[in-house]
Amino acid sequence: MNAIPGSAPVRWRESPYLWAPVSWLAGLAWPPLLLTLVLFPPQGWWIGLDMDWRFASLIGAALASPVALELIRRERETTGRPSSRLGVIWRFTAYGAILAVVLQLAATLVLLAYGWSRASGLAQGVGVAETTFLIYGVGLLPLTAAVGAAYAAWAGLMAAMIAFVPTPPPLRAPSHILGLPEDESAA
Image 1: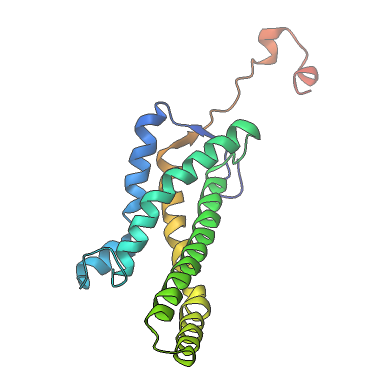
Image 2: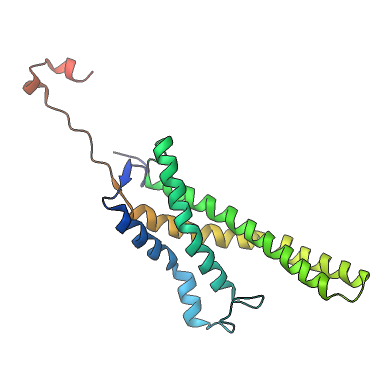
């Protein structure tokens, strides 16, 4: 009996070509994202600088979740880890937080270049760069990491519950069938 829920050994569910996409779809359906889309309809439906952050996170999750599953598959082939559902969830959470921070920094650089190109002079360009960097590169970074980790934890939970199943315990023949004394079968 495992003391921590989710720490039992797992294996890929049979037919991973079916269950991995199902877990991907379930991972995209993060409840806070769906709830906010219903309660607060987006103003901008287009991809661009004024795109709603929920669509950006949905696109990021749609692209990152299969990559995370592939990284987990490769790691399981080489090291046998993660060997539990909890390990799968932790891998997804770490990948999601790192990806969210990297994408936020990339978006900051794009906004910085856009603002610099629209500036009328050197002083205005420096001011735009400073403001953009402080707001998007420093101020929003912890929030972005938290949202990315939360979304990835949900996707990891869905992958761990749908794409993986517990490994059955090893079969042991009772000692009286093997003809061994009781204390030899325990070794």
